[in-house]
Image 1 (cartoon, one colour):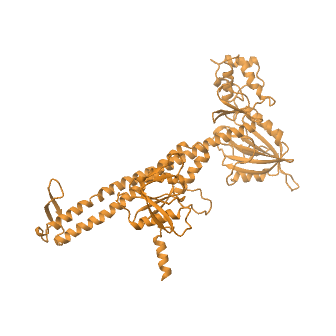
Image 2 (image 1 turned 180 degrees about the vertical axis):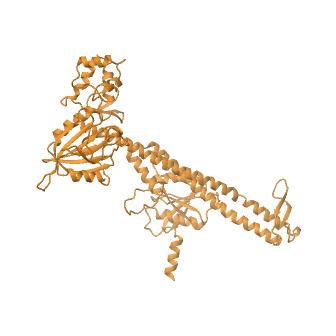
Image 3 (image 1 turned 30 degrees about the vertical axis):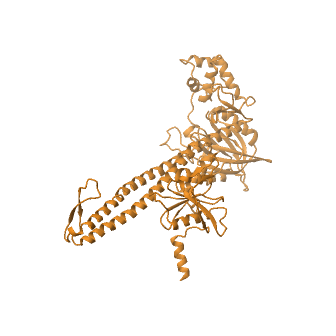
Amino acid sequence: MSYDSLTLRLVAEELRETLLGGTFRHIEQANPTTFSFKVVRGVDTRWLTISAHSVHARAHLINRPPPGQKQSYLADFLTTHLRRGIITAIEQLGWDRILKITVQPVSDEPIQPSPKALIAEFMGKHSNIILIDAMDDRILESLKHIDETQSRHREVLPGETYCLPPQQEKANPLALDNAGFTAIVESLPQVTWRGLFNNIDGLSPTLAKEIVARAEKMPPWEAYQQVIAYLDAARVAPQLLLDETTPIAVSPLPLHQWPNAICQTFDTMSAALCAYYEAITLKETMASERRTLTQALDKQQNQLQRKTKGLQTDLARAEKSEDYRIQGELLLANLHNITRGQTEATLQNYYSPALETLSIPLNPEQSPSDNAQAYFKKYTKAKRGRTRILQLIAELEAEEKVLQLYAAQLEAAATLDALQQIRTAFIANGYLKAHQRKKQKQPVSEGPFRKYTSANGFQMYVGRNSQSNDLLLRQIAKPRDMWLHAKQIHGSHVIIRNPENRPDIPMPTLLQAAQLAAYYSKAHHASYVPVDYTWARYVVKRKGNVAGYVHYTHEKTLYVEPALPSSKEDETKRNNRTR
């Protein structure tokens, strides 16, 4: 239900009871369209929120102001004119959704300033907050400036005279009797909510629909009387209607049009409105956060796909390394048949089952032997490139698993806290930028596991916690990867990636990985730590769902000193110190 005339009428009554005679002490701005006013009356302090939001325009009491933004010009202007001012009148203008709060400013000067009026118009996208001089209705300032190019009915500009929006010819709901209501109903082809809404002042679409819903079980006039009776503040029954956890409407009366809705009752309209708009804000915030995270995830997945495609193309080229080796071997085997100056040699390929002939381009300025060595050099270079490409592809496969994990977490996230935890992880991984204030340092990018490169060029992954350990073992590690862990000591799992499926891992790499496993264990202060290592295919999760606990076989043990791998920069600094 929108913030309608009936709701505003009841809120205005609440504000008169609690704020009349109070003093404006402070103004805070929650967002570009919403302001919170601190009002003190005696020992009682209240906060009034007024919003000109295009969808959620409203005014009501709140417990405390929401986190705010930097004060705008209008906030400073209102503070200048209203601070220390005494509220002398609060009224709803006719049946319009317009609230007027008259304030008498207080000054230390002999001549007191003229009274001011804060006017809040709650009209969808035309909502506005306007400050006028109450003596002559001259507009002093407004949230939105409306000139003749935007409206041909009235201008809302500083210096102009404030006038009400164009009025519609509708019946006064309090003055409407049975005969007048019957005349309206009889003028309609059928009793519809739109017909009532267009002919009776103060009705919102929701209230008009409520009259029609009640009229299904009673005469329309009786249904109308039941709804209008809640214009009496003594009969108001503030409530919030929910579809499970999704807010449907806030209302000063029971709504029969949603018979299956969950109903929460409140003592005041302001309390009901607070609950409704807090729920709406939470829902919209969650939707916005989910949309932002989904877009960031999609961007990362698209980048990953492009990188993978490019590496696959590079790998296809690198796979030709074997062709270079075969060409070099054939040239060596036929040196006696080749002479310097030839541009090509046609030789039988005895590496092929079909034994077909193979044409090999030659450099005529080189000897046959040098041509063969040139092909072996191409083979060595291409093979090194293939090894690096396979490592990069393995890294992308690991990142894909991480993105899949985040996608599952994002789909399952049912609270704002869960979404914000995912946002924190995205910022740490570099998927999103952190909101920067002034010159705060950028957070260090941290993925779900630590990454190191061994002296032999192998990628080493270290789990950060039990969930990260599980991810390494269950999603990242391949059967021919090497797994390491401090022997019978709590610590991180370490994986040495082996994308080429080599039958063994070089000892320097094993030692570095073992030092990492020792360093990220409970024994990292010890001189020497036993570290078990075995192929990942021999490591299995224990029964149950305890994260991080595994069973392994075929292990061997290294005794190492806990340490982190030295980077090239560290080595350079160390060498400079020893000179």
